[in-house]
Length: 179
Image 1 (cartoon, rainbow, N blue to C red):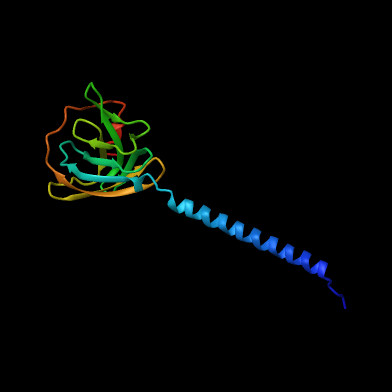
Image 2 (cartoon, one colour):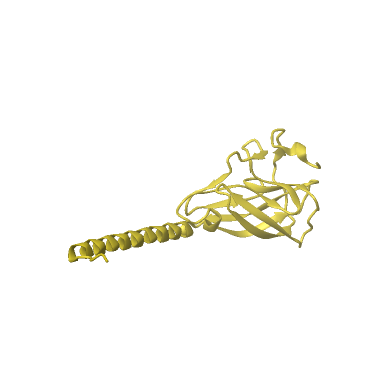
């Protein structure tokens, strides 16, 4: 039988105390790390969409979604596109000073605390390769996609409105219409 003396007992107590403190510290780090991940807001979490509406299509196979996108967060958000069950393609477009409509390369940047206006003849969400033609009074659901991969579903009524003076640039990838 081995006898444990007081000196050995103190060493073992100190060793167990060190192990316990290390375990507590590591569990605290793990908890903080997961809390930080949970606390990180996605771009979609920072956005509020109001006054959304979809224009009654006046051209075959395409229409636009308009409204206000407010960035309520403290970092910029970038709207890069989206999807809809009625459209084969959903892109973010702009109308140039020359009246040409084209995709916004890199997406629509909305600064922290600012609001982007999506309007006829300006920046808008373009729905292309429509599988159906939505009529005034119906609703269209569009899932907006942001640069970080997050998404936000928006349901908007279809309204009749006069078109902007935009034309379609050969480079605007409109050649896929009807495919």
